[in-house]
Image 1 (cartoon, rainbow, N blue to C red):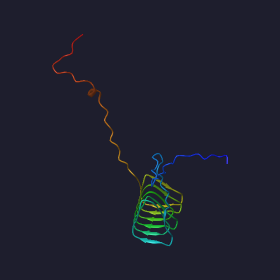
Image 2 (cartoon, helix red, strand yellow):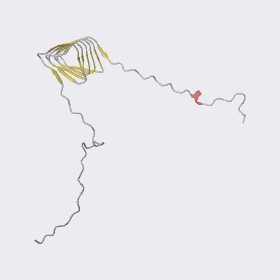
Image 3 (cartoon, rainbow, N blue to C red):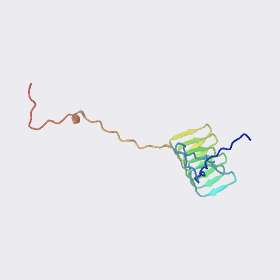
Image 4 (cartoon, rainbow, N blue to C red):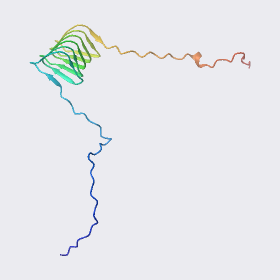
Length: 162
């Protein structure tokens, strides 16, 4: 009764974009990935290749090339192993190449290990050679000789006596 309705001008409809643009300051995060598991009752005859993490509790007869490898206590590999990091609790029969290798007390490795870092617990069995990665040395830059820094005398002109 005492209220007065105010006349408001009509507003244009709001438009929405299909997808908002991502913020530039927000970094893209990758969701953590679970390790692939080769369980105790699995046998693989062939190579295992990938960039992710693999946990082996079964048997692999072939080469294994992965990002990170964990060999469980019941795990058994017959072939070459190549990874960034290896944690071994089971058996590896073959050459091992990785930046970081850790052999736990239950590990059995029969083959050469090429590594940057190697750690072995008491009780681990290792038969083979331990070969450290050899990073190529940077050639030393020769120091300039003092004679090369002095200006060369002009031919035909002798210094003036004082």
